[in-house]
Image (spheres, rainbow, N blue to C red):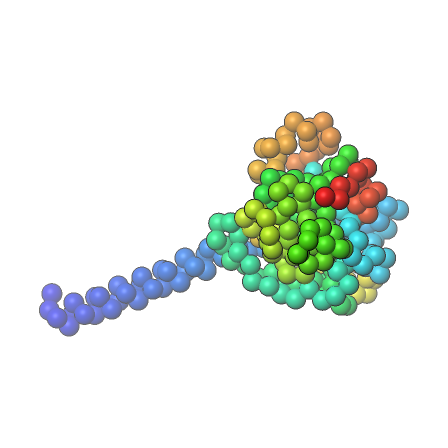
Length: 234
C-alpha cells in the first residue's frame, strides 16, 4: 500500500469510527416509550378538567400498568424543559409541563432508590408543599426511605439522597378544547420490571392478576389522601 492510499484508508477509518461513535451516542439517548393512550378521568368517570386540580396538591393515577402509580401535580408555576440522565447514563430531554401555564406534570410514584410507592394503606413518598427537611427548598417530592428528594419542576431531578436517577416521567397531552389530559408515554429510567419482581406477592394480594395489565383508555385520578389511608409526613 502506497503512502497516499494508506493516508486515505486511515482517514476513512477515522471518519467511520467518528460516525460510529456519534451513532452510538444517539442510540444511547433515552426516547419516549409509547403505551396506550389513557384519558385522565375524575371519580364520576368524566374527563378530568385541569382547572379542577388544586395547585401543589398530590393526585394519583395508575399508568402504564394497572399497578404502577403516578403522581399528577399542578405546580402553580411553569415547569420548563430539562436535560436529564438515567442511572445507565442515557440522556433525555424532558419537555416540561403542560397546560396554559405549563405547570402540570406527571411522574412515576415509584422511588428510584428502594422502589417505595404509595399503596392504599400507606405512602412514604409524596410531594411536599413545604420543606420536609431543614436546608432543602419547598416543593419537592420526598421519599422517607433514606430521604431521596426530587424536584418536579425540573423533570424530577434528584436534589438529595441516594436515588441514582430522576423519577420516570409520564408524558401528557393537553386538550385545550375541553381542558383535559391524556397520558400516552413514559420518558426516562423505567423501573417497572424491578417493581413487579420486588412486590409480586403484595401486588397479587392488593391488585390481583391484572397488576401487569396495561391501562386502557381511561385512568382514574384521585387526591392522594383519598387514595391512601395514611400518607406519611417524615
